[in-house]
Image (tube, rainbow, N blue to C red; front, side, top):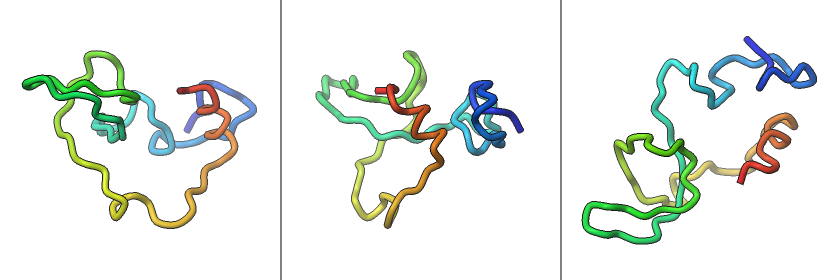
Length: 85
């Protein structure tokens, strides 16, 4: 376990509570907006990935597959994401 981003004021958390590169399975899932299709090229906005990251699959977002009910997250996660976008 380690403090998120080395912050001593945040709790110690395991690797599965983070989105860091040390995860045992580096496959990520994110939602973005498809802006344009140009042949085999997809133009997207707000993709949560590092430039050059390979995309192995795309799927449409459907309300039925989104989390049901209220989403809860700890205060440190809200603080971490405050200025992310």
